[in-house]
Length: 211
Image 1 (tube, rainbow, N blue to C red):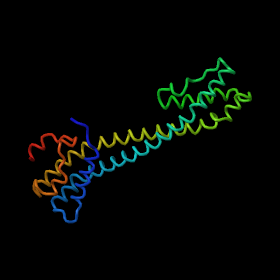
Image 2 (tube, rainbow, N blue to C red):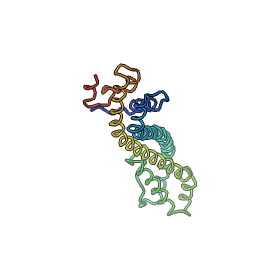
Image 3 (cartoon, rainbow, N blue to C red):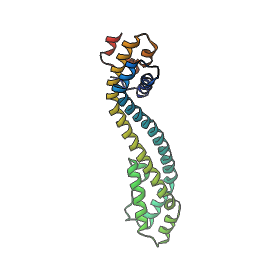
């Protein structure tokens, strides 16, 4: 089975919604839509919209986090080197580029800040805290966390959409069959909501029975 084309399915279900709620709809079509398909359609459409919104938010927050990390890289390396120059035994994290995940990058920034804070009062430590690294680090940490949160929200939205897809697809097939029998296989009503397997959504044996 190929990948599900959620965007195409969203468009098809929107057409089903339009057909089922149209004031000129055949009574049986309107009734079947309301009784059988409406709940599942609304759940899927809402879930898909959440994914689209989530993708936009994740893209925005990701770009901001990446820009923040670029801006802090040199100040971080400088602060790390200075701290080790004064306290060679100091335990400090590796460079940001060697941190495998965003969570590790946040931890590295926080750990270096904590290590320097332990020596406040020393000119070198005060200079780091009041310099580029000390002033930028909290904002960079905030940007990274917001990116992580946006990606988590997007993952949850995608899971919700995938969960809503199955019931919506099953009910869609039933509704489409009714539309076919009421309006005919060559009608514009049926053709507008007919989703073929080639679009990335398999319809099981349905295509074979409908022609």
